[in-house]
Length: 274
Image 1: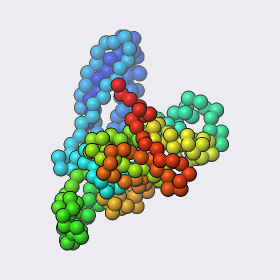
Image 2: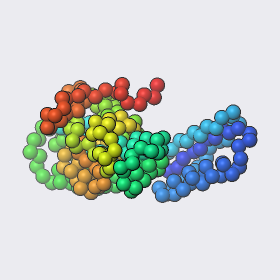
Image 3: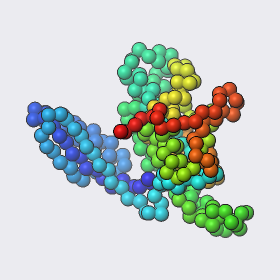
Image 4: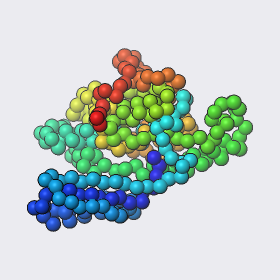
């Protein structure tokens, strides 16, 4: 939601015969992950249980008017993804079936496995977004609006919509649209796919993993077009404009080459929590 991290709590449920060394290694791993983001473990609990359970709560802070919510998308917004999709799903497949992906170059194989085992939260995106928004608002306030009655012209401070894509790119866009009461069009050729997948699986399989594989932990944002273009230029590394928000209700996967028919995306194909 655009928050800066403050800390996490960790609650453990452990069998009585769990070794102290195992617990220490668990905490060492968590601390190593947190140090990169200047974040600490601030508390938690430990109790006995027949199975190991690790429950983590993360805390952050953000100004209310800067919070990124699912419900802020508007028709005409550009849909931006901050990186490639399908990498984590591909990495999982390689871990489960090591014999697969024989044609993958070693760096590509390692990159996919790392995407699954060591996902990186895109906290680096937020400062770039804030800077571009501030520049845009300054320009909007200096320049007489071309369309004075438009919502954008009346509200240069308008909020940004978005969420992470940990449950898949399709899920993120669908959740944003459902919360905002809008629709969307996604262009299949614009969805960024990890390097090397074309030598291993079909284009259809790669697209399916990108849309529904999950665990990529990229951000999906809806932005004014000029800001989205600036984000792609600044972020690089797979950041891409993948579609637009519409005033309908469906999320449609389109194909500008007309090779494939339009496809209406639904939540039923993605991960369901309940």
